[in-house]
Length: 312
Length: 239
Ligand SMILES: Cc1cc2nc3c(=O)[nH]c(=O)nc-3n(C[C@H](O)[C@H](O)[C@H](O)COP(=O)(O)OP(=O)(O)OC[C@H]3O[C@@H](n4cnc5c(N)ncnc54)[C@H](O)[C@@H]3O)c2cc1C
Ligand SMILES: Nc1ncnc2c1ncn2[C@@H]1O[C@H](COP(=O)(O)O)[C@@H](O)[C@H]1O
Image (tube, rainbow over all chains, first blue to last red; front, top):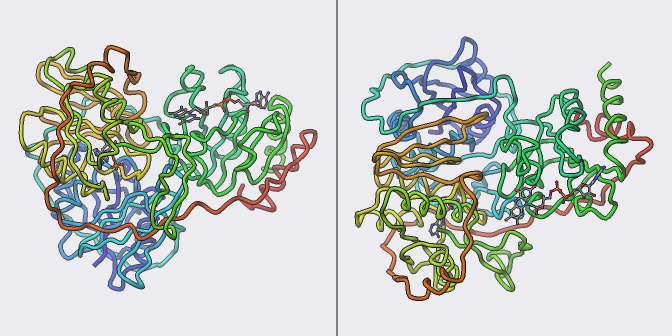
C-alpha cells in the first residue's frame, strides 16, 4: 500500500501535495491513502481524488504544529502503508525523518523523478546543491520519498475518494509556537512557477519597483542574490543560492546577477533561465537559455510593456 | 558537523560515475555547521557549558575538525566511518548523544554535498527529543530553548524544553573565523576517535550524474527586448 502525507496549508492542499498524489498513484497498484492533519476546506478532498487518492484520513486533535507529535500521529495512521510520499517542503523536511525512524524506513529526500523499480526501488535525488544527481537504492521494506516541489508533473487520474476521521491526543507537546508570521497571499518562493530575481546590478533598493512590476505581470515571485539581501535591499527570505533557498521554477529571470557558482547552485535546476546583464562575459550566460546583453534600466521597461501587451 | 567540498568545487564523478571525484577538492566545514558551531559557542558563553564537535568521517576529516576546534569548540569526537548516508550518520550521532550530558544537539539545515536535510529530525526521533529545523534564531533562557524558524511562506517563533535538537538556517549568526590564538589552542584540544556502532543498511548510492549541459544561450537585442517576451510565450510556451 502507498500513502501520501497531505500537508494542510490553512485548509488547502497546495500543488506540492498534488504532485505527491500524482507520484504515489503512478507507483501504486492498489490505491493511495492520504493522511492529513486537521480538516481541509470543502472541496479539497475532491482535488486529491482527481490525482488518484482513494482514501483520505483526517487526523483530528492536534491544534499546533509540533514535529514530534505530528510525526507520531502520521506514523500511527500508516496501517498497511509501506511507501509514503510527501513534499520536501519545510514542513515535509521537519516530519519525514521523524516518521522514517518510527516506521523503520529508508528515507530519500530531494527526490526529482519517479522511481526505477526494474531492480529494487531506485530514486533519483538532487545532490551537491544543484550540481549533481544521485541514484539511490532504498533497501528497507518501508520507504519514505520526499519530492522536490515542481519536479513531478501533475497527472490526472480521477478516482472516488473515501474520507475517514481519526482522533489523537495532543498530550506531551515539547515545543510551543509563540508567534507565526506568514506573508498572506504571496506565493512561497519554493513553489513559484516563475521567479523574477535581481542582483547588485540593480544599484539600490529604490529600483526594485520595475522588478516587482514585471513579476506581478508574469504572476511570479521575486528573489535576489546574496549581497542584495546582505545589504538589506531585499528581505532575507528572497535570497536564493547555495546558502539561501534552492528553487526549481519553470522560468527563472535573472537581472543584474553575475551568476557566481554559489548563486547557480540554488537556481540551476530551473527549467528555463533568462539572463539580463550588461556584461557579455557574465558567467550566468553560460547557464542561460535566453539572454539579453544590455542595461537593465533600458531593458526592463521594454519587457514590462511587452508583458502588458501580451496580457491583452 | 559535516565536512564538505568547498562551495566553488566543480563536481565530477569517477569510477564509471559511481564515486564523487575528490581529486584536487578542498574540504571545508559545511557552511550551515559553521553557523551552528558559532551559535553553540555564543549560547555556552552566555549560559555556561562546553561545546563538543562530532563528525562521522574518515581520518582525512581531521584537518577540518581541527579548524572547528580553532574556532572555539572545546573537544571533538570523530566516528571513524565513511558517512554513507544521512540515516547512518544520525544513528552514529545518536549513539554519542545517548552517552549523556548534552542539552542541545545542533546540526546544519542540510549538508551542501548530500543535501539530505534529514539529520536534525532523525536525531530528534532516535533520541525522543523535540526537533526544530531551519532555525534563524536560537537562544537558551532559564533552561528553555527559544527559536525562530522558517516555515513555508513565513517564519514562526517556538519554545522547546531541553534537551532539544535544532538545525541552523542562514541568518542564524555571523560565522566566526579562527584566530591565531585559537589555531594554537586547537593543536592540543582533545580529538577522540571512536569506532562506529553497527547499523542495518538503509540504502545505497548506485551512481551519480551531472545535470545535462545547457545548449548555447539564445540572445536578443537590447533595443528589441520585446522579442524575449514573445519567445517565452510562443517558443518556450512558459508564460
Ligand atoms: C560560501 C559562499 C556562499 C555564497 N552563497 C551565495 C548564495 O547563496 N547566493 C548568492 O547569490 N550568492 C552567494 N554567494 C556570493 C556569490 O559568490 C556572489 O558574490 C554573488 O552571487 C554576487 O551577487 P550579484 O550577482 O548580485 O552581484 P555582482 O557579482 O556584483 O554582479 C552584478 C552583476 O550585475 C551586472 N550589472 C551591473 N549593472 C547592470 C545594469 N545596469 N544592467 C544589467 N546588469 C548590470 C554586472 O555586469 C554583474 O554581472 C556566496 C559566496 C560564498 C563565498
Ligand atoms: N558525516 C557527518 N558527521 C556529522 N554530522 C553530520 C554529517 N553529515 C551531516 N551531518 C549533520 O547533519 C546536518 C544535515 O545533514 P544532511 O541531513 O546530510 O543534509 C549537517 O549540517 C550536519 O550538521
